[in-house]
Length: 273
Image 1 (cartoon, one colour):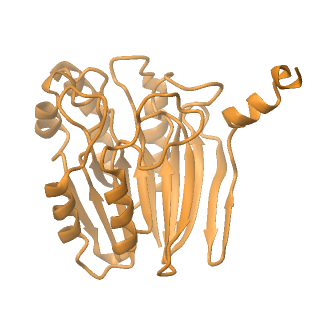
Image 2 (cartoon, helix red, strand yellow):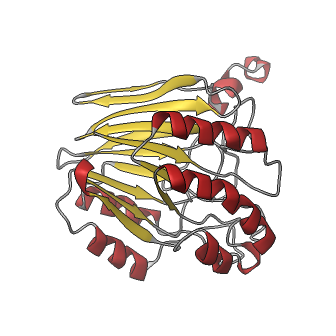
């Protein structure tokens, strides 16, 4: 079994709350996961001073366990990808955790000074070569969405070539795809024709107050074991845990953290007219 903590959308420089980040680091120290994966928007404006400040927190995590990050669209503002690579890590990367039979591939969906995302043919080819290895637990991480999610606003949030990447997850039997971007914890499970399952897992904003509706800042605690999966959403405010998803063979249970927008609409008095 591999144990993962996913953090995302720290947004250092805009509504970032140091106490939330300290809580996350404390939780990581107590639980000692195999890897911490950050799915982008570490800073808010891509400024070098923001990267230099937030690296103090990232370095604390790196002293505890393995760490991998992908850039988000806010990291890429103002040529920020330059500073991301200088101070955080490469914009795309591969990590193999041999003793856990696990591979993690981080993909850059962010583009310089653009809100929308794209992976592109060259990078998709690179990802395919990365996954050309027989490891049991196969994880991909990127910032932008592959599938739209409820209560995330009306902006265009999916990567331009989402169809190709969805097909890729089937062909390469990816167990888990981690995403951030719109600050909404959510999950989808797709069962493919080849009998494999892929879970698409989204993370809330972990260290800022840039939440949606009445969500709480949160991060995900993940247990992946040869296709079986448990995901807990952890509040960054008080470290309270709640089950978000449990996926076992032939059974998936998803605990929704809130009502969706359509449920609010259907309950509205306007429909009674």
